Each structure stands twice: as C-alpha cells, then as structure tokens.
Length: 301
Image 1 (cartoon, rainbow, N blue to C red):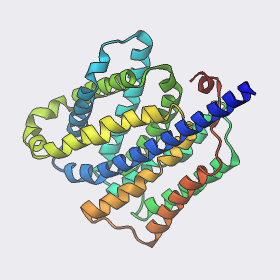
Image 2: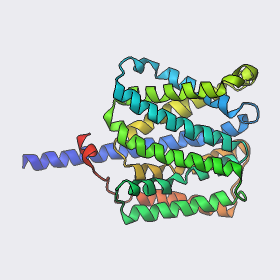
Image 3: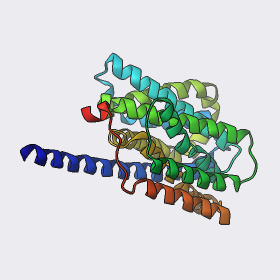
C-alpha cells in the first residue's frame, strides 16, 4: 500500500513538472515571438553579426556568476549547445534580411516535423497522435509561409535555421538532465557570445552609432529574448520530451504574426489565418491525453 501511494505521489509530481514545463515553453514562444518584428526593424541599420554579438554578450553577462564551478563534461556539452544555438540564430538573422518577420517565424517552425524525423533515425518511437499532430502543424506552417510568395535565398537560410533548431532541441533534451541548469546556460551563452564577437569584429567599430540608437531594443532582446528563453527552455526540456517541445514551439510564429501586425503592420490573409488555426489546433491536440515518453535518463531525473 505504501509503495502504491508513493508511486501515485510520484506520478502526480511528474505530471506537475510536465505541466510546468509546457507553460515555460509557451512563455518561451511568446518571448521569441516578440523578437521577429523588433529584429526586422533593426536589420537595415545594424548587421546580423553585430545584432547577435550584442544580444548574446548581454545575455552571457547575466549568467557569468555561474561560470565559477566548471568541469570537462559541462564545458563540452555547453560548448556543443552554444555552437548549435549560435548557428541557428545566425542563419535566422541572415534570412530575415530578405524575408518578412512572420514568414521567417513560420519557416523556422518546420522543425516540428524535423524533430520526430531525426528522433526516429536515432531509434525513438512516436505515437500516431504525435505524428498526426506534427503533420497538421506542418500543413499549417506551409499554408502560412507560402502566402508570402515563392522560395528564395532568405528562405533557404531560414530553413537551415529550422534544421539547427531541431538539432538543438534533441541535443538539449539529452544533455540538460546531466548538468545543473544555470551553469549549463552560462557556458552555452558564453560560447555563443565568443563566436558572435569574432563574427562581428570587423563591423563593430563602424556600427557603434547604430548600436546606441537601438540600445533599448538590443537590451530587451538580450535579456528577454535570449537570456530568459534559453533558461526556461533548459528547465522545461528536463521534463518535456523533444517531440512535444517542438510542437509547442509551433506557437512561436503565431505570436510573431500577432506582434508583427502590431509593430510592423504585416497582415495575414485568409490562408494565413487558416494556417495559424491549424498550428494552434495541432499544438493543443498534441497535449490531449499525451504520455511523456520514458527512457533510462528520464527515470534518473
């Protein structure tokens, strides 16, 4: 009886952690959604390299106190995640130079189908519900993204970002349970900041005036769009499976479209609204009676 009660209590705790993780991921998508119109406003005056360097350096500075106790495994895993995060952010910013903010957000959300595909390649099993929900989400994303016209160079770069996001989600799901959250975030952001500064070094001096002009926006993006989401994402993916996280992230373009309308006047037509509705439906459907997949690492948490 005692063991049965303990098992029941443990199940309740796991469910509560999972629910908290879902809420943290939704918050993450809201914060990410605010970034697209803000970045689009800056992109003509500040280069992608400089934007990424400033935002990542601000974010890294917040977590500097947690760099005191490091070990080889933490440095290795944090560096890998930092490189992946740098790659996805860099390709997204380069793509944003030639495509709209809401189109960029929806193309990036193609990771919702890439995550389960990559996961299956590594021997993971997914429920039919998750596969169908991913298919519905990708259909919605396709309808939305194609409303903006044909495929171009910026779209290819942004698709590269989607591949990077999918790889990051799966890698984070494996590595986050192995380390304390804050030191892992600190190493990630430190590596991302170093890579960004190297990339931006030739342009920094000549863009100081533009950086000062957009200082408030860059501070917001550094703190609210970079530092906070990478922290909430790392916490959430301790208890939310990678394929679930990818489906929740499909809410990002919906919020991006909302903020892009408010800040840039970018509007969605009928097809865009249908696409957004499909994404939302798929996201909520994926959470109905869903079961968190377990593996030995999950049990060790």
